[in-house]
Length: 114
Image 1 (cartoon, rainbow, N blue to C red):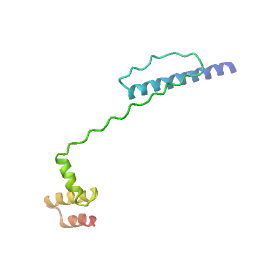
Image 2 (cartoon, rainbow, N blue to C red):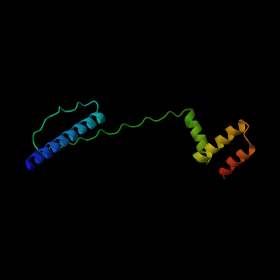
Image 3 (tube, rainbow, N blue to C red):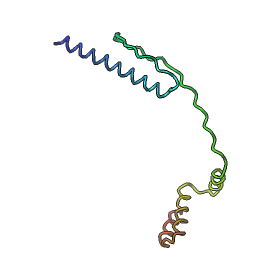
């Protein structure tokens, strides 16, 4: 009975090692899709071989956004000295004013800007 438990335990450990290696292969395939994953080997040894350490490729530089209308708008808004929340409240107040909102509501939004 004890040897049966030991065999079961050994089989579960080998199965766990196999699953870990499979997950590592899948992760490497997702990180480096252009490289082909190594073929699966069935090792009967009890000690798994660690995967070789690979240097990740250097990160690609991010393309700069065009300095068109959005750059001009960002420049104007950054020169106002207001943060994003205050600009959002001003925009909301302007929109509500154009829609004919209640004056008390507009005053409460302006109060939040203080």
